[in-house]
Image (cartoon, rainbow, N blue to C red; front, side):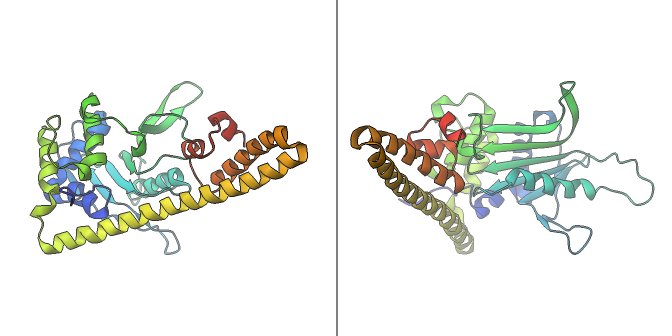
Length: 303
C-alpha cells in the first residue's frame, strides 16, 4: 500500500512542512513548543541557509532552515538523518556564524541577540546517558549553579527514543514528536491530533494532492533517505557479523586453552567483549551493542 502522507525526515518533506513562506506558522508553532520562553514570536523571516566565513579559506556553514524573529533573534532548525562524528561540536560551530554576522562595524557593544539551534535527529548520541528524547544545553555557571547566559541555546531531539503510542500522548509537545515520527505511517488523521497546526500538516503532507513535478521531487528525496537508511542498516549488520565471528573465534581459542567446558564459558564471554569492542569502534550505540551481545551497559562502558 502506497504511503498517504510524506515522510518529514526527507529533505522534501521537512522543507514542505517547515520551510515554505505559507507554512511558517507551523515553524513558529514548533519553535514555541520546544522553546516556551519564545512564546511571543509574532513573525519570522527566512534567511539564506548558507553562511560564509570571513575568509575564503574558512569552512561554510549550511543550515537546513535559518530564520529570525522581529527581535533579531536567530533560529537554526536542522534535520540530521544519520549519525555523524562530532555532531554536537558541529552544531556549536555553526551557531557561531549566526553570532558573528550580528557584528557591527565601528564601535559595537557586543550586545548580540540570542541564537537558538533545534536539531531533529533520526538517531541517538553515542553512549547517551539518559532516556529523554529532548536535551537542552545552555551556558551554565557550574561553580554557582546558575545560568551564565541564555542567549545561546541548543535543543537536540533524539527521535529514536520516542516510542509512545497515540493513546499515551500527554501534551502538545509529545503530539508534535508523534506526528513527525509517524506521519508517513498513518493513513488517516488520529482523533488526538485535531489541533489547527496538525490539521494543516496533514493537509500539506497528503501526497495525492501533489502535481507530477512535486511527486517526483518527493520520490527522489525519499529514495535518498532510504539509501541512507539501507547504508546504515548494512553497516550495522556487517559490523554485527564481523564482531560476532571474531568474538566466537577468540572465545573458542580461549576456551580450548583453559579446558573444554569451563574454558569455553570464559571464551564466549571474552568473545562477547571483542564483539562489543568492534561494534563500539564502528560507532554503534550502547543500546545496539546490548542487543547484539547481551552484555550490560556497565560492562560495555568499561571496554
